[in-house]
Length: 252
Image 1 (cartoon, rainbow, N blue to C red):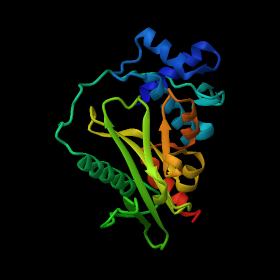
Image 2 (tube, helix red, strand yellow):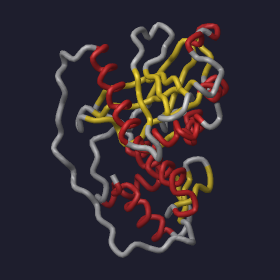
Image 3 (tube, rainbow, N blue to C red):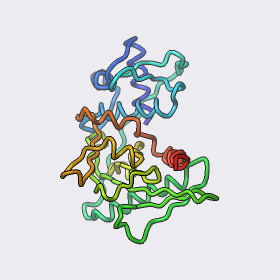
């Protein structure tokens, strides 16, 4: 997935100024550098750059100079070679997979990520009943601190599209021991998209759209929605989820 960032780096280097992610994507497509089946590749371009900046901070090749506007980090050393990956074969999942099965698959993948990655060991438990909206219970080894995770997933072959989800307000506790994870399962690749949103419950309550008289909280992320920029700070590499949870536990 580094091709998006490498392409953006080359374009920004040639431009000598900051550009909007849409402009970067437009130039990449016109030059034939970017190969994607997605309908809104600018969303993926924006996500790659945002996550790179959030994760690497001052060590990132990029800096964000405005909403969806990016420039080059003057302190970064230019890489010697830029490689662009070729498009891969497209796969489809069975149409007979039920909604419940999809939810179980996404929850299992999230549990795997939490278990495999992280600076300390985390254990995941699935509640017998999820009537209260809790999909995973996460506990740090050697500690009594526990987090309760609610997972919202979407399946499809276009991770560049708009991600929308709603959750019942009564299932969200205004406490940092609870968090939401919004993830997209890319059916072409047979795995979760490289990035997901990890939103602590208090932040979700603060920023989400209030729907149905306040009974529902709405989450909308995608380049076609202006308000989606408010979720940029919660977009992370899926392999960073465990460490985000560990950091969150320190706030409990």
